[in-house]
Structures are given as structure tokens and as C-alpha cells.
Length: 275
Length: 135
Image (cartoon, rainbow over the protein chains, first blue to last red):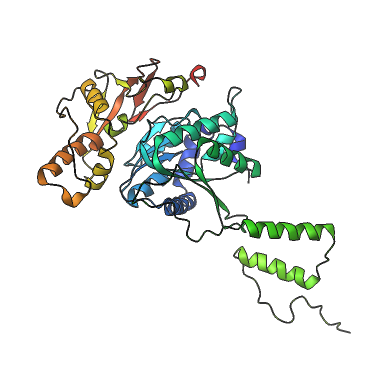
């Protein structure tokens, strides 16, 4: 599928018809809701917080912020059509027309937390001759860091195009002073793989919770091992047998959530000659 | 835009970051339209959470520009949790809720005191996009 980021700048891509299609689609609503709930789970917020929603669009994520834990939120988005769609949906939060690349326009220590669903990958694009993605990213993270209170948290789900974009975003966040990293959900699945940037600005004040990383495996070691294995196979040093190949692929498919036939003593065996 | 948001919003222009005049933005009382939305429920927990962060001087300034003078000149103090609130405290908090959360600015304009750029508010949505020369 083509990436909207490659087609047009966000304020042009999300025009009236696209905004209606996006907001009206139950599939999109379902996915957005799922991701917002997951982001909230990672944020581990106290109820009744003041939250910033970066790239709020028509408020699909904002609605959930209001429902789950009575948060009061402020949303920024660059697309007028998306905001107009949001106006019709009677949201409780505030909407603002603003480009995140020019900075988050709030004074220091305004928000308890910030959330962003499917938006910050747009920062990696240069839409005009005077836009420099690196600078825009730095400006965004610097101003966001300032706008969050001490120990404030930021969780952003995004769709990176490649590893370079992931590195750029992580790098800028680090330079701005954030600590944290990347959480990848469903890492084995190509379709359901989701990237969450989980950041916090300094240690939380006494009596407040840190980000919730339950169920997240820190698998640096694991990734290294598979990489080594792949390298070895590529070099042809270890030839793997047909049976181990099948078992390895079955294991992979199982982890991706596919239906896989049970392993038995016949797995990977040749059929007997009929004649 | 809620009245509460005016207490946090500053001028997004980068050159104004170093100035002390970029917050709060100056509202033009004559051109601003205020609307009460009574459907927003009173949430004492949130009010207690946010009241620490409210810049009272800025709140008085903006309220004056928008033609409201009912605020006390000093920030009222509250206990840190809801059960400790007295009845009087609850009433004051409710008044603040009506002012900060239920009141919103639907039409109008605001100006940065430093660079003088004017931001327009339409349908309750402020337009904070910057022209290329200010980015």
C-alpha cells in the first residue's frame, strides 16, 4: 500500500473527502481506538490529567482520552478538514490548527502527558523548500520537552518508513533531553507491527507512576542472535537441513499468529515412492 | 478554545521564545465571542490537579481583556485531595470550573505582545499556523 506521506503534505492530503472517509471508516476507528488504548496503557496516567494530543485529527483518540479516566485534552492538527470533521463530533477537548514542526505552543510545564497516534512520521518529510526535517524534529521535541511538566510522559504511535526514520526520531528525542525508547508490538507480524515511542522527561515526582512496560520484552539479545544466525546461513558455513528449515519457518509463522499444522515425526520427511 | 487554554498558550514563533512577552497572548475583547457550554461536567479532581499550574496573574490579565472582573486578586488555596475540600472551597472550585472549562472563545483574535502577530479564532479553533517568514 502506498504511504500517504509520499503523496502530499498532510494539510493537502487530508482534504474534506479524505477526512470524512478516515473518520467514518469503522476499520480506521477500530484500529485508532486500539492504538490509543495501548498508548494509554503505556502512559500509565493518573485519572483527570491534562493531556496534549499531537496530530489529533478529528478527535478519534481524544474521545478515548475523555472516556478512559476523565482526562482533559488539547489537540493540535495541521489539517483544517480534519478539525472541521472533529467540530461536528462534539468533542470535549480543545482543537487547534498548528504545525507540530514549528513547535508546541505551550508554556513550560503545562501538561501531565502527551500522546500522538499515527502522526509523528510526518515530521520526517520535507514538504517545502524551506522545511528541514531534522530541524523540525528538533524544534518539536525541544518545545514538547518544555511543555511537559517535570516527569511528564509522551507516548507516540507512528508508522516509520524505514529504520533511518526510527533512528532520526529517537536521536532527536534524546538530544532534546527525553529518556526512553521504542516499544514494538507484534514484531513478527508484517501487518500488525506497531511502533510506540515511549519517552519521559526526567524522573517522575514522588507518588506518581512511571511508564508501564509490562509485557514488553527487552529483546536486544534475541535480535542479535537471529541476526547472527541469518549471517551464518548466508555465508553458507552451516547448511541447515530441510527439516530444520521447515521447523524454523513454522515457528516464525506461529509467532506471527498464523494457523500452523502440528509438528509430528513426519514433519519434513519425504513422501514414500508410490511405485 | 476553552478559557483554561489561554492560560497555557504562548506565541509559537521561535524568535519570541527568548522574550517574556510571548505569554499570555493579548485578546481583543471587542472582537471576542464567548460561549458557555454547560454540558461539561464538574470534575473536582482535575480542577485541583490543574489549579497549581494556573498562572494567576496571566489569568487576571486575560479575564480583564475579555471583560470579566469576578475573579479574586489572589489565587485561592485548596487542599490537595477532594475529600479534604470544605463546602466553601467546593463552591469556589465550581465557579472556577464554570469560568475555565465551560467558557470558551468561539470567535475573535489574539495578538502576541512581543512580535505583534495576530492569530484568529474561528469556530472555536485558533489558527496558529505561521507564514513562511516567521517559521
